[in-house]
Length: 214
Image 1 (spheres, one colour):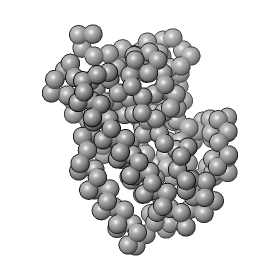
Image 2 (spheres, rainbow, N blue to C red; image 1 turned 60 degrees about the vertical axis):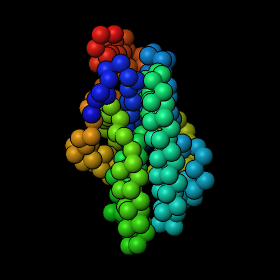
Image 3 (cartoon, rainbow, N blue to C red; image 1 turned 180 degrees about the vertical axis):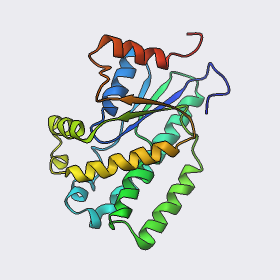
Image 4 (cartoon, rainbow, N blue to C red; image 1 turned 30 degrees about the horizontal axis):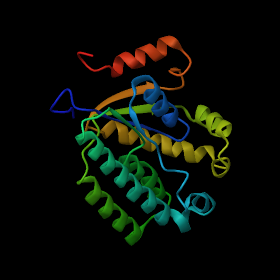
């Protein structure tokens, strides 16, 4: 989906697994192109650390927090876009909250029965109220590289995550993104592409994001 008015601000969403480099790309696009950033609200989820300690007990609480918070971010972005100011870049979306993370919890038996049905009903309702982004950037990253990056950034509650968990999320991301058709997409292989340090990778990315006539 592209804006009807080519001069209207774009909403660009950045998606990808934990450690793929989403926040770094959002900050990069803010610095390089002056986009307004909307970062993922992981630090203020009051259930997150408990969730990583006991996924079954805290699955619904944690996922509802993320779903509602993400919906509010999407709505805030819509308001900002209607103001016709700067382009906007978003760190993670409501789609992957439901179709990757919640789907994994469902498959693992942590979010099932009436809790799963209620969550799905709420997600479908909220999604129907949202305008999709104009562009979705998917950061593809292999699990061994994800593990190294997660270890390096040092968030305590992430350090004990097993590789199997990251692999299952990776597979769900691939499955979800293969079916995603609500907007234009770009895939960046972050194992290979270094848009933060490599000048050629950086210029190639900026050219891909440049709007016609600018």
